Length: 252
Ligand SMILES: [Zn+2]
Ligand SMILES: [Zn+2]
View: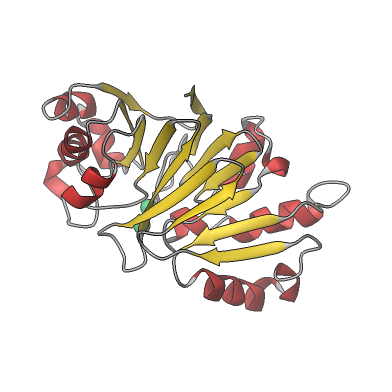
């Protein structure tokens, strides 16, 4: 499978990082994990096949993770000729259906009947589902907002875990244990640490507990970018560390 970090930023306007969004391409599945502000146009800028997205998975309902969801639906309906006909499945925490209901109040009822089969599947924490073929997704609650979930995506013996936004949590790290790649948030420096986000040291500690094969960091607020993130992570975790940029990708 190929993972591309499409958007590695936050709510803070940034010259080179849009809101959160990560594309996993695995066989017949093209999965967009989160769809934050700027992600839809960034997909096009990177030459990624946004038209072929089969699934969207939302970690939680903050704007830097969902603000482009309606834009993606507009793109499928009005941004290509002919309009999309392939089915789309949106998965997310409890409240995802309500989110679509609210978006439809703002943008129109067509969001529920966009001209292709739209399935909204709400997943509970600790739930596992098969997306298609042998691509499996499972969830784990994370300490950020009440609905926030991390995703584990497995196929052909490979496993990627995406934390979404999270504070340090040993249970999440243990659940991610042994994964090939941990895509973890790294929001704030020690001087601004809060329980609902990770510092570099905490992201490194999560990776150390998980014993993941490699750690890829994302979701950087500008104040964390002025510290030596890799050095702080290395104090905890000795595997491969990558600071993701918009457009970074890896084949697993
Ligand atoms: Zn965020
Ligand atoms: Zn958030």
